[in-house]
Image 1 (tube, rainbow, N blue to C red):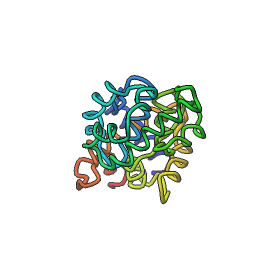
Image 2 (tube, one colour; image 1 turned 180 degrees about the vertical axis):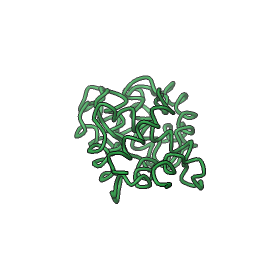
Image 3 (cartoon, rainbow, N blue to C red; image 1 turned 90 degrees about the vertical axis):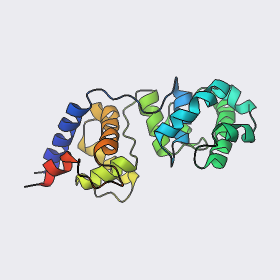
Length: 206
């Protein structure tokens, strides 16, 4: 099976499994999405979704977030890992949004990645899920599965992202990256033995 055939099989099977893909992080607009994605680093979406309702009730806009002290933000997100750093980032992110962008989330990678706590993956998620621009945010699930499926030899998520964008058409990027994440969680978790990972078996079992 060629690489192109493997990519087509993966996309076809994922489309059967997940014809509709909800955005895993609860949010109401690009700002709350960006905050939720920034909080999700090294923790689960489930945990983030447990914490953000109260956070967004108190500080669901850059204006409100900027008025809080770092300690107040930390108290609201204390159940999430790296809460010290994340609290500092959220306050400074809000301040810079007000100073540079009139409180509006920018729509370019350069401007997004200049904000504290916003790396390339977070910026890609905001561009894709917040604004609808074609993007392929690669997290550890996607990097691991694409390596497993021999669709990338990338040593890191940046290289894997380039491979993903070269393999699949731009029109399906926004949906496909979510489909791979859902598949990874349900059928091929990092700590599991992969017994349920039928796509890998379809690709490589004779």
